[in-house]
Image 1 (cartoon, rainbow, N blue to C red):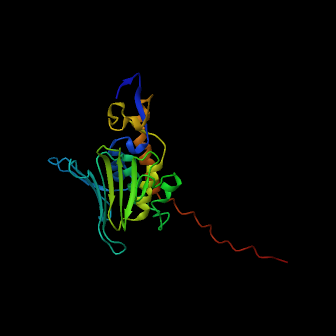
Image 2: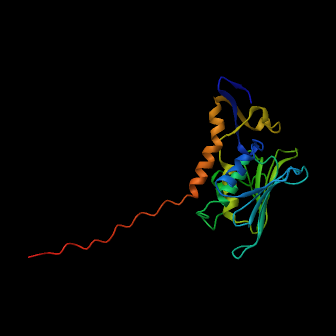
Image 3: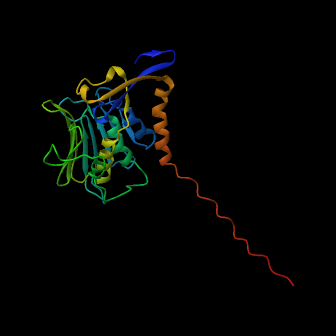
Length: 250
């Protein structure tokens, strides 16, 4: 990233599902610092493992060219069956973060009957180019369900798949809905100009600007602070002591 006199070049990319992977710390740092997930480190293995405080959920990043890089697994418990979500290496971190942010939201799901297709329909995704599921207006991103399992795929016609995300049966629908809502978010995402993907360049909007270097450095800190605030319970308001009304005297 080129810098000049305290500023750096930053590129904004849209649609976000073509922006490339981005910085994994956008997901892992808030999980550790804001949600209290613990991490294990093996200096001989190029992988990251984070585990939720209740030990039921694990995030694993494993740079294997033949398998999804990101895997989130939740063990079976008394309330729900086990499930897993996987994301390929080129899945933008903002989309994965939508899933993990919803997963760690202490307030719980806003709508237990969430429909993952709802945000797509609102954004005018349709079935014109696919027999099943819904496709983005540009035809690149596609979401479909088969029973209780869901698949997201991005690909340009007659070219290899860019990235896939897969959600096994039992994955809470409000988490999948958080992902589909992020897919339709038209806000450009920031990337290092030297890391813009070469695939589908003619299908994306790319603009470069100069921003203060401190803005880049503080973006993650602001995100951590925002997510930490969700886990901070405000002190209960003090209950005023009961004071009996004064006695009336003659």
